[in-house]
Length: 237
Image (cartoon, rainbow, N blue to C red; front, side, top):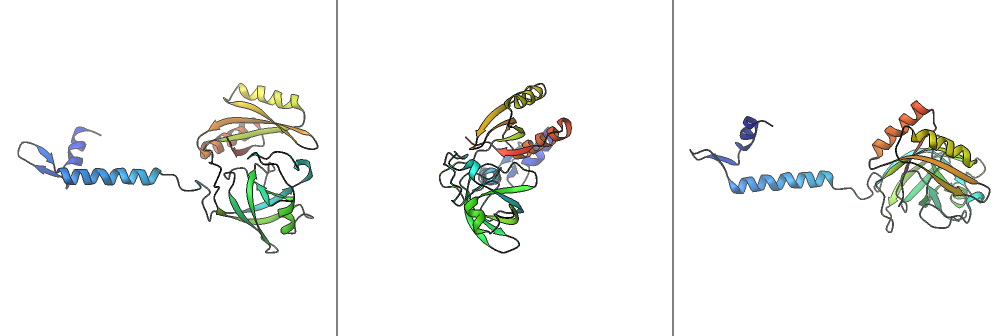
């Protein structure tokens, strides 16, 4: 901002000309400063639930998962009970309570998000077997659903960091090869291990980003340039 623009800005309702130069009216200047700070604070203050507040809605396809993960640790540290009423979502803060409605038969169930997934293209939610039974979708395996956030987590603080899953393998050496290749182009490439009751899955992830938008941009680049099937995931503490 140039000097003339600064003077013009100051020569508003909160300014007086004393004959010796422009002098700010202190009370009006302070009021303007207070309003400016309040506006910035309101604009930058995070909403409860962040990008998934109460009444947030999403539609898509849900699947369900059961025995291979039964008794295993979920993303929030709880032990997965396939007969309970829980769900996995890639991005919602852990502990979020959502109402899931089957869009064809109208049945609904309320579940807690305590895990991450699904890692299958075109799906937005992975229900526990117990929740899927409530919706009468276990035989079909998948169902069109509408989900709505009804309550926020009371115990888990949502992480504001995101990563991109670039690959998942049952053979560890394949995961290591992909990770090595990606390290030539990207920072923060790392491997994680998920053990189920049937096998071990080796996941390759890229990036640790503070904005979801940047994570989706990275996922798009990995898909285009490296021909990878990517998923953006909230990175939990």
